[in-house]
Length: 402
Image 1 (cartoon, helix red, strand yellow):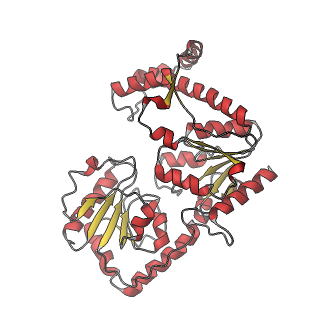
Image 2 (cartoon, helix red, strand yellow; image 1 turned 30 degrees about the horizontal axis):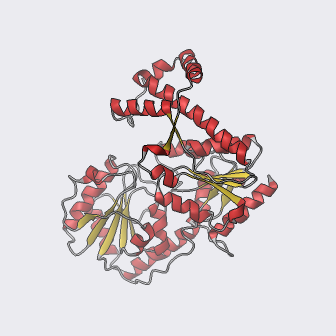
Image 3 (spheres, helix red, strand yellow; image 1 turned 90 degrees about the vertical axis):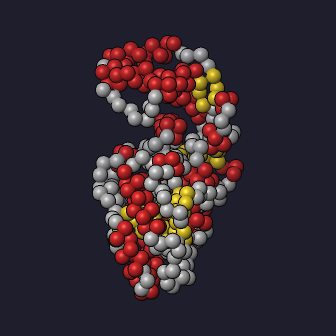
């Protein structure tokens, strides 16, 4: 039997079935043929900023943008198109499901997946119409192995013999356990992956031909900022939690930090959550008066204004390298290896030892130098021009050679 924990209630599942049957997403897209099509399907600001920075040096006349960020952020029901169900298509899908014994697999969720498949078929039709109208010369996806809209446009482009690219938007590493990220790394859809640096390329080369990996840099992190502090005298630290608020590692880490904060009233601890998380998941854990939830609007500024950060597994780990500030990583069976694990802790006692160790100016300086080296390996820096200009240059080269 299929068990989908994301379907939290029968009401939610019923609502989604109605949505699949009677609505369709609208696509906010520009006009113009024979341009580079860039697609962004999410209602998430930080990733939207990454995409915009990646293409900011592309000549505007050479790109057409399918940007659903502002549209999907709308709360209004008017952000959808409404239509009557295509009974013939539904019946065709139902027959196929029945033939393959899908009822045994999906169980009580059978109708949900039937209508979801129907919705995706109609989405393909809609995007196919858009593609036929635009006839782009290439496609750049936000993440073609994750988002359906990106995947569909990438496959349509490949069918048409046009080159396709996908951006890197998060941490790509080898995990010590099976994760959905493992599947994504093995199932790259686009022809080329535009990655941030050498370390990402080394991981992806295990799953795909190295000629399909293009190291271009991260447009949000052009240069390493010098850490002019020569000693560790912390007054403010920021805790960044990963995506899943109900996960055991996040709660265990926060419990340790809550006790640590109580023993260090001289330090202000700011807690930052992933955009998909909720502070309610941690309300019973946080009892220290100097540990406060502070929604972060600008990650870079937050790191810059912190004396140290505390993380588990999150992209912010490598983003923090830009400032050379101490990074304390919670260590458990799920910790990924980013660099030498001399900045990790499993307990409050371990964290106390790390803080005392950094009181030695030489040790503090050695950590800063380590982060400088890691920054260069994680974020390629072009010798000339900006990172976005490098994106444009590399994309044009592949379009001409394709």
